Length: 243
Image (cartoon, rainbow, N blue to C red):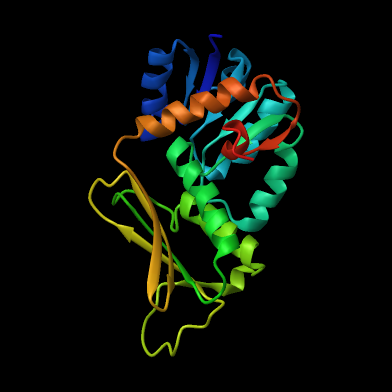
């Protein structure tokens, strides 16, 4: 089925990748929307909306999608926790896929991380390391954030357990700590490693992206899927049948 897509954030790196992927997969970008464009007209134009713009306008786009009864795919990251909770409640009024990463491989990494965190006890120290290009504005990345959420959920911990880097005389590592380390440099598309380290052994789960096309193809796959769903917020795990 060919989709008519309204794309928000069309001039960004991901926007350009989605335009190219849509052409390859037989879909039409009927509205390429960015700052200064007519958002309302853009929202009305397509069968489904894909948003890779800015976390500052996610609420506006959700409300436009709801007002026009359009399924929505959100790939924007950088939302504060409280703000995201409110936005999720609004997004549940329409069929919506919201994910910090649309790569099929990364979503398999999410599933494997959940399994590992459920099997390995607190004697396995959990650390998450991510690296992105020098232009990325938020840290940790949305993907790293989701990996951390999974570990915290499985270990029944709160965000208070997170340690964003370490400096100075920190003392011995507490068994409930979950380390977070964000590296930035060059043109790295996205590397993520989840490490579980115990005395005598270490398990590492790693995904490395070398082309934004993988995220673009995943976002379009999500758009194809969500177009036939009932109202509610879904993640890429649901799209891929991993849960």
